[in-house]
Picture 1 (tube, rainbow, N blue to C red):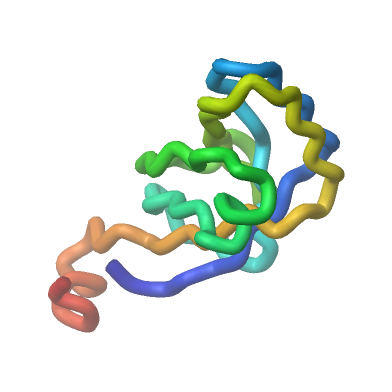
Picture 2 (cartoon, one colour):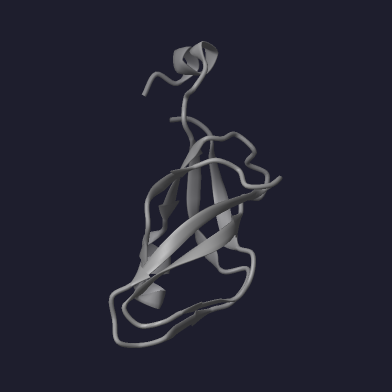
Length: 102
């Protein structure tokens, strides 16, 4: 795995109780895909949600799809622009594998 980039929610997200909801993330300046999406501990602790770890491809310039899981009985509302976590590029070319073998 190589370059890491911050990700934020592109729009307000409403997560009903006991549900999994897809979301769109802005990847900022990170444009290397496919990538591994990892939600931050701060996001999980603050909103009491479980980000779904996933390997993603860009859905359009600067955006990827991910998801969160709500295992509580409370409805959660997350504002647009909330930091979600990081994406980390996966080595897919021989050159990138030489620079970052793990």
